[in-house]
Image (cartoon, rainbow, N blue to C red; front, side, top):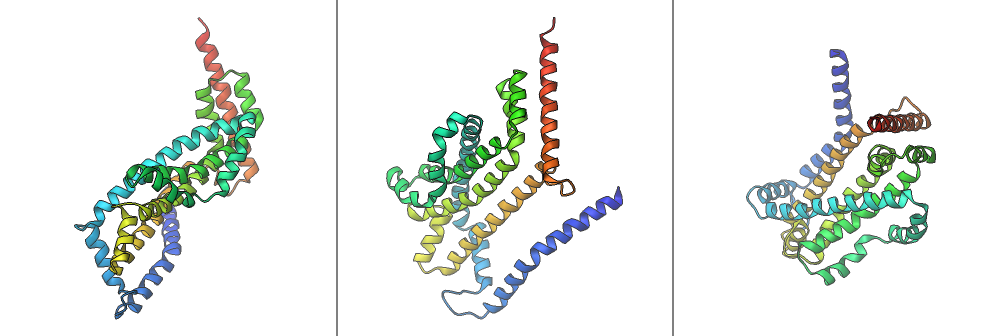
Length: 291
């Protein structure tokens, strides 16, 4: 047990070193190359880092961060609920797919950023249009990947659940969501990045607070160290969110990412597991109905 834990620890350290050496090298090069810079456009990295820390701990940037990421998480949560609900409904019904897929394909091809000026003009500059735009940008990858994930579930599994008259909520919770989970996770991972882009762009178009407004205002005021600080902060947040979600994804999709087993066999095992759960639920329902 001890040797397996130490082996896992060495594996994690090796993975971290492989991922971290290039960013660390680039930051060091930037630090030393800009140390004596007198250019207003390329301030020393030390000053940028100082402004970032001062802005977060005691400056106005902390209030902008709270405002921006409150909107971000509300918008992402709304997109998750709508994307999963509509995606499961459309993916489960051939009729709904025929009705909605042309519209969904149109939405897939339309970059959500182009709607920012229209929505800001229509809804104003409060937090509501930001939340709407974040949800609008995030919902499509979640929805479209959920549709594809549900469609990829073998028809025999769905038909078996229907034949046993398994309740809809059990079918969704135990059959459809687990079966479509790999594609859903891909959609959420894409949505996390799109949400940050929509957050910054929406605050640059019409806002009086937020990280996007901070970056825009500091740039217009020629406080370029603050502009760099806000930009670097957004990059760090995007990386941290993606890394945290990758850890979560690795945990919940461990069965799917088992490299030692071919993909077709993994899917077969998963579907066999779902079939066993359906049959178990049906048997339980029969036992409960007996006097």
